[in-house]
Image (tube, rainbow, N blue to C red):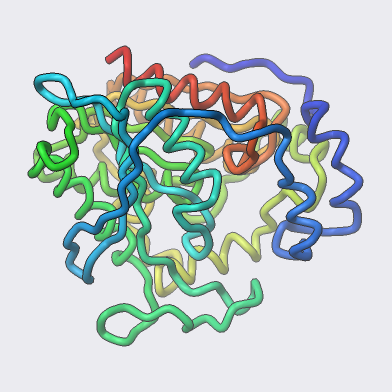
Length: 336
């Protein structure tokens, strides 16, 4: 395991904004204007010369919108490496325009000379406990979207990219799955399914992932790190439970490895995996546990901890730690 040591302090750029979060107990309490100021760009977006094409792929619940990012030059013989990428947002928020989707896709495609397919999977309803109606997003049968609908959407994209590589200009043997937060849960769950079908993706790239139902209890070191972070950046148990219930469509006892890969009893066929946790993030306990499960199963896994940042740093534009993460993701696509 490669762990970058930290001092349980926010990086200076975020520490300068700590005052914005005073008095809030979780991110769900943040007014829109406060959240906007917290996430205000730290610098301009990166400049990349890419072609960006919006299209759809067929899925079992209807068309799945995707956005394909690629270098503007013709693909080399055999195609480019590819990353199928899922943004985060607690399974209920987010879109293809958020930095965790758009800027990540641009940054990885540009750095690696790769194709990134960003997936607009169907979102689950926002839980009532977090200000939603609980039934505002329906599937094709008129029921609230829940597992396995988002997972099916993402699996359909992986299957389509590998079945029709010429359409995307990719090498079908070099298609990776990846995501951040809830998107990482989707990427890992789809990977478990693909492994059981005998067709694991090339590799799996998971950034600040949640891979178990419920956030695992932190160890003493992580508890100290969380105590040093603003309360507004934490995930209280009630919030985690509400998110799980909305995604699963029931209690946590209904979870399967296709929803949370950490429940898998056999990970021996999982592909080479990169797990990046954030130092000041409760989800670090889940990413660290899953990395340990992979190592125990004999899987090639690289685990790092990004120092001085809380959950969600890829959603910050012009942020140096986010650029460092994109360097790491692109390096995986370019080097393997």
